[in-house]
Image (cartoon, rainbow over all chains, first blue to last red; front, side, top):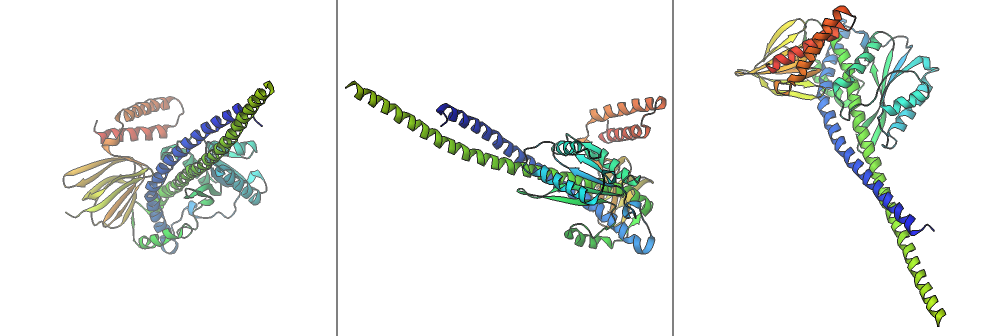
Length: 300
Length: 133
């Protein structure tokens, strides 16, 4: 059996670990709150753009014949881009590993060779993962703030959208962890471009909301083509940003849960160790008494 | 006078919400004034000042790009960035202006991104104008 001192030092170190995990849990909880409120304050922006775009897009089929390359699926998909949003730091449970595993599986299923796709990676963990496997990374951002500003990802978002316009990519997907609740994150794939199933593809709730607004007849100043030209890249960029905010909220949720269970485990471990310690202490005392008694009776 | 609901929204959250009588914006085609009861309209905006008028109060907002959606009783401005005069960091805008000017100066000689510097300059000037200094 380990000596008293060994057990004692293990208890102290476990206590210290527990303090750290506890602190990280609380920090994540605070960050989660902020991330969530940021995510909610962002919603009206995308919803508005979505409304306008869908009202232009839905009007175009019958009457005016307005179209835009971003709204049309390309006949031949030569190259697909995947935007993968991971975290910069670990200690957040299966947050990154389940996402990356899923992405890797999808890549292997859909594509015969790495020539057929390109990756745009957010977060250090994802970057290292794909780099190690030698997969084609086109762009990467690491070291984003905990509450990212739109400006920070504007560049990467607009270059990505530009790559689509230039025909480097024919399809763009986003892979990220969707925030379901604090304890549950769902690995999600959503199609960013082209926006060909416009108006009916996303969440069911939004569609019903849209239908009331789409029958408004807008005046387009100067004309619908130019508006689409301006609006669609905006919309696509804002979708990327939205996914990022969602992913950040999930990250904090995941980290919080991971740290919570770490704290619980530490508490259990401390209890166990304390029990062992006390038992060992008692045994030692008993032995000492025995020795004294033994020694005393030997003198008689 | 008849009023309408005005919302100025950016990806980082809402900047202005309130009842107004009239809004003046700068679209890609030129200035545009909208009063309550206007027909539904959509127009893209450039870097410029948005004036939201209610009674004799005029609220200025510095807007960088984006677009405007008008409905009879509501006007929404969606911008990449929008700032009220009180939120503008004047020192930073000034620094940005100088930096952009230097870049433009250099751009004449070397090949750096002229358009980007020009846009940065426009944004900085716009902010300074709204901040009133």
